[in-house]
Image 1 (cartoon, helix red, strand yellow):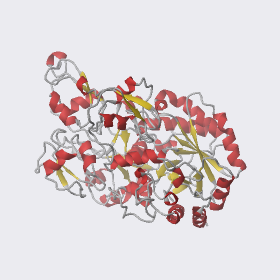
Image 2 (spheres, rainbow, N blue to C red; image 1 turned 30 degrees about the horizontal axis):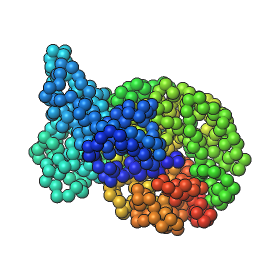
Image 3 (cartoon, rainbow, N blue to C red; image 1 turned 135 degrees about the vertical axis):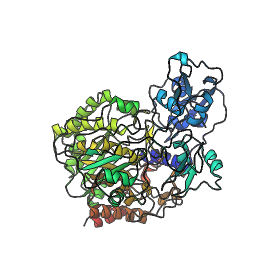
Image 4 (cartoon, helix red, strand yellow; image 1 turned 180 degrees about the horizontal axis):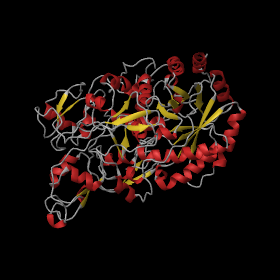
Length: 635
């Protein structure tokens, strides 16, 4: 998408700890902030130490979506509005606005309640909170009719291995790709507290390292949980997924599901036998007798309010065979699609052109008829990536959106991508992010499209590649967990191809190590790891469609904007830019897991804080070095 690059690197900056400081200095009313490219309300609220809701109210905003250049009045900090823990009325629940530096265990201690009671009252399912978020502190007095307080029990999160108490979670073994900030957020504490508790001399963690968590002890090395039921696999079309529960281990899962530990490791790309609560596993050698979507077992974390609002699809799936078994093909996303772009794409051997379509209620699909006809007249198949503003992601809009994409199929669209980067609050309504909810949208869209044109390829929306969230909740979700959640919700019944984005590589796509940035082992750094992660998540039941794959070279400009300097001033030379794109096409063609690869991008010329032109295969001087490398890879 047009501003995808900057949005992604903003998330990446948070992932690497380079975001604005979490603590903000006090200020007075009257400050006016000009929104910068890539900023969102969460970041701005954190920067000034105020609540998101306070900014929304002060500026009379009707949505949390903001745009570069917009002027926002920053209100005074709302910290003083929180009830005093020692004087508040304990017979009734009160609201609490999260401040910078807050974490759940700290808030629970201050108000004399359990973490679990806050999570239940606030309808949240993990311990990650953010400045500006509204929490509900439950009543503690018996006269309020509330049940007696109980010891806090761990709520399984996407990557946490719970123990007997969330306030006393014992120890945690570091997994590959994890880092201190991520674990601090996951367990409701701070990096400083973890450093102090574990007497760390550096913040770099090593896989296998055992950390003592707040309230825990070195002796508490194994999770203590109530007995769990035998594992039950979740059937999906063409594969079986299983969501790990607290107390599970790999050998227990293998025995219960009729497979072996080594087979599970191979199918899921595991280098060790360590698994954690919330992790999604593909079960090899098993397919569902009936591919109807089945809910995740009740023993896992409670669903978010948004997930509960939209039931996981249970109706019989549309009986249309996957259309992604065709020959691997390449295309490009265009800005103007003029003569130069067409010539470059033809010389590269591209057969597809991608356009992004912005949808809103009342939009007329017939307005896109010219786009489809123009592509056909120029000899290209057309992919339409359809999305709208976050406020249109609630379930009441799904029927109209489905009718819109169904009409696009009737007009002759060859492929349609259903939304885009749904795991971020920039693309999906904050607080309601959920792979199960998205599956509800996907189901309606798929049904409408196939009813109008069975030949149209339905591509699931590509999540934004990120490990920032350290889990999956209503405010954001790591892409691997989002895909796994979609599979568990039955999404494979409603797609022909799995949408993927990959735009952050700085090395050859043939490499799987050596990235110069922090968190260098994270799978999103490497093309092979991205393919493996997504293909494994769907059990090989669907091929992958890269709706954006690009490399960024700022050689002609001398230096990229600061947020995009991932490997020196320009990341790579133009020659490397061309080489890497050719290699990505060659690998995708050879391995048989990819149906479609859309190059991001062909002819964009914008070079600002979001340097879209530096991704383009048509360089500023009009040349296209990548055209020849892509063409060679297709021969």
